[in-house]
Image 1 (cartoon, rainbow, N blue to C red):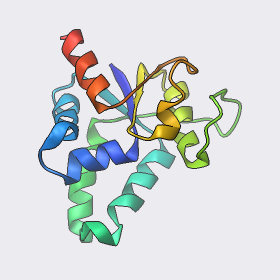
Image 2: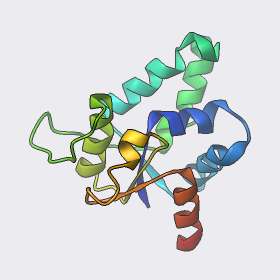
Image 3: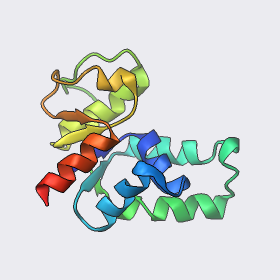
Image 4: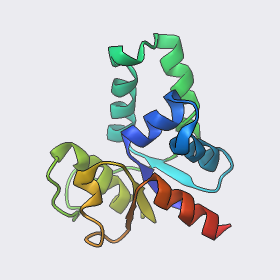
Length: 139
């Protein structure tokens, strides 16, 4: 299953032990899902890991990126021409564009601005629980 994981889902899977989001990590590490990444989404993840609230030094940030990015398929997102649903938060557009360019089966997010777009895109928009159910059904 080809998936776009938004930054908060990846952060939850990498930084916080336990909980449902940590199960997402096992999905990408087992190959049950293939996360997609673009230059923009990888850069956003690196920026977010540097937020002071996480208290991570440069080596810790690099180690966490190494727990995610090697599992991802890198997707080149065209500078323009992709048709994506209009989103209230312009920062979310990079994830929608990645899903289209990468032919994702699903975009996974807890962000209400993205979740309200369910049924308006050519891919599923799921929360973490929805991804876990879909992965379980796929076997």
